[in-house]
Every structure is written in structure tokens, then in C-alpha cells.
Figure 1 (cartoon, rainbow, N blue to C red):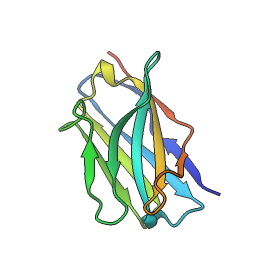
Figure 2 (figure 1 turned 30 degrees about the horizontal axis):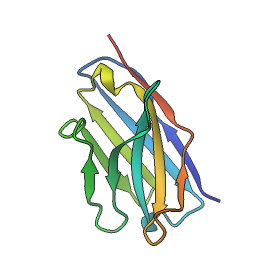
Figure 3 (figure 1 turned 90 degrees about the horizontal axis):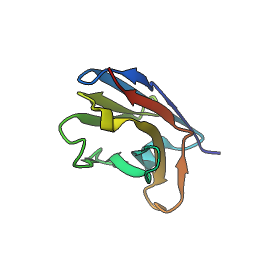
Figure 4 (figure 1 turned 90 degrees about the vertical axis):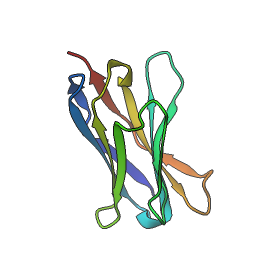
Length: 119
């Protein structure tokens, strides 16, 4: 059974930094593309960043390009989202998603971690 557990959320000041982690279990981690989504109050869930299973190629939402970096450590079954220079508009619940490279529609989600950007 797939289990994804996010951590690292909290309160951060604008211009600071924060690193989110998502630890996976119950899967062959290297076979899964991993993504970060976020959902702010009253808004739809949106893709923030994604990293492929094989090459580790990344893609980012325009709103976070140049500020956020996603990476993965297959030895630790963990994916990270480094958030640099966060803005108040980055405040949201951040979710981790795992999708098998051959069955991308069968995705699993974590429970989410709250990130609040405020001075």
C-alpha cells in the first residue's frame, strides 16, 4: 500500500527559505514520477513542480520558476521541494503525489503540509 508522508511545512518569512520532504513507502520509488501540488483557501489545487522517475527531469509552474527546486533521493525514497524566496501568495497546503511511470493515472497523494508565508 502506497503511503506518502509530507513534512517540513510551517511559517516562513517572505524572502526566507523552507524545505518540504515527502517520504514514500510501499512502492518501488524509482518507478514513480513525483510531483508537488498546492491548494490555497478558495482555490483549486495546482501543480507546483514535478520530477520524472527515470532521468530526474523537472518542470515547474511559472509562478515558482527560479525560486523552487524539486529533487529526489531514490536511496531514501524521498522527494524534496526547496522553497527559496517564498512570497505570501505561496501560502497553501502542499501535497505530494506519486504516479507510476507506466500508469500515470493511478496516482497516490499525501495528506498535505501547511506552508504559511508571512512576516
